Length: 198
Image (cartoon, rainbow, N blue to C red; front, side):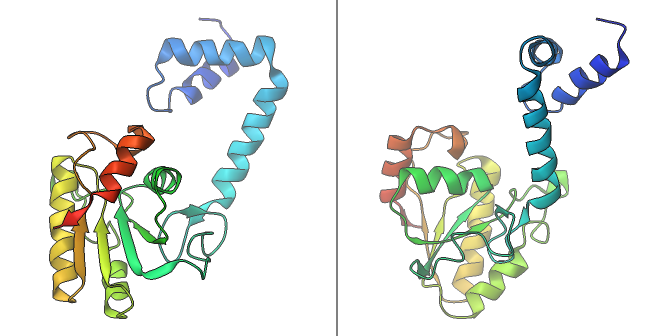
């Protein structure tokens, strides 16, 4: 590697991205420096703006630059339906693949006691308050079909039952161990349309 400490810092910065190792980070760095410095500046500015301005929706916890995301701000959506997902990318995947018109609640993870992630870290107290208000009639559990995702779905199902809210689970067309944002839209749409009582 070059003696340039700035180059080393740039390579190290790219390595923070998932799936980007030292060689890929080095290629990305050299590409921007040798071929497209303007794109590098645009990328740096977009990243800075996003990091400084994007936060969590106060209602569903997805990522947004406003107090409420565009979905929670849409009065035409069905407030009786609430879909539970693990990550903001799952919201995007479902919005693109289905014609779902309800609202979402983003856990920002899944129950994992070994990693110190319990109900408090997933905002389940916020979810419970939404269930108490009586507007939600069906809770759609769209957590990933991993062991942790299933445990999380089961926990939320019991929470819904305590508040007399019906809970359904998306159908298994999504591969076990898979992540929603990696599943093709046809499979995801089929799984969502075929959801069943939990």
